[in-house]
Structures are given as structure tokens and as C-alpha cells.
Length: 242
Image (tube, rainbow, N blue to C red):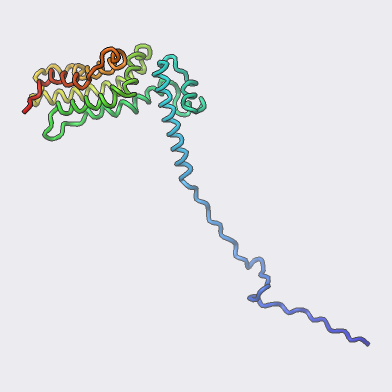
């Protein structure tokens, strides 16, 4: 009779040995750290939005200068800026608000310089001469001058723009100039006391320079620096040279 070998079952392997199967409940679940949203995408979006806004403003200035405020269309500005027309309305409600932004960013900061008091040991004339040089360099012969010329040309037909320019630029500039004149009178630098009533007289060469540059410079170039110097000699008296 053929002997059969008794079947033996394999003994269970120790839990620590290779090949052991751990109970499901013994497995430690993987910890998933919550994802913290990066601030970079939001920053990028803000930067792109600022770049688009700047492109729109620059395109608007180009269109206003070349076509005039009345003839310029939103479609023209969008085409020049390389954006969709709807993108413009995300930043500005109309042409007037775009023009106001041009005034606010390009011209308003300059008027703040008139409010600064003269440096210690400096004269009021020094402050006004410095402002005149700044105006010639940064306004009269630049794109900022185009904005002023547009206001002079289009203001009568668009009083809201003229009002905004007066409120944000002209009134502040005149107030600063009046304060400097009163200080100069108190110091004896200016003898004509009534000049404080008409600070427009002190800034008149600035308007002449802007208008002349656009209309007559090709016929008779204007030395604006020399014009300002001569004007201030009339107001303060000629400088003494030693």
C-alpha cells in the first residue's frame, strides 16, 4: 500500500518577517498637507492689470493728441492698446474718466512741489526758478504739454474736464504760488504786494511756453529758460552778480 505523505500547512510568518500581510486597520493613513494658495498668481494678475491700465492710458493720450478728444473713439483706444473694448470698461467708464486719469497721474504731482517751503538759506526766487526749470523739462517740451494743450483746445466744449483740471491742478498751483508770493513780500523779495492777488501773472510764462511750443515754435523758436529768467527779473529785480 502506497504511503501518502501527510499534508502540512505552512505556519504563519511572524509579523516582522518579509511577506507578512498587515491588517488593513493597522496601516497608518497618509497625511496630506493642505495646499496653501500661493500669492504669486494674484500678484501676477495685479501686475498684468496694472500693465493693461498703463497701456490704455498711453494709447488714449496718443489718440487724443492725434485725433482730438471729440473724434477719439473707445474702439480706437482699444485697438492701439492691443486690448478688447470690454477690457477698457473694466478700468474706465468713459473717455472723460480716461482723460482725468491722464491729468491725475501726469500733472497733479507736479503742483505739490510749489507747496514746499524754501530751503534754509534759500530765497523764494530760488524755489520759483527751480519750478520753472522743472516745468520746462517735464511739461513744456514733453507729452505732459500735449495734455495741457488738449485742455486748452477741448475745455470749452467739455466743461467737466476743464473743471477737473482747475480743481486738481490750477487751484492747487495758484494756492502754492500765492503762498510763495506772500512769503516773498514778507521777506522783502517782492515789493509789489498786490501780486499775491494775481498769482496767475507769475505762472503766465508757463502757459505761453506750452501754447507757443505747439503753434509757433517752427516759425520762431522760443528760449523758454531765458523768458522765465527775464520774467522773474521783472518781478524780483535783477540778480546781483559778484
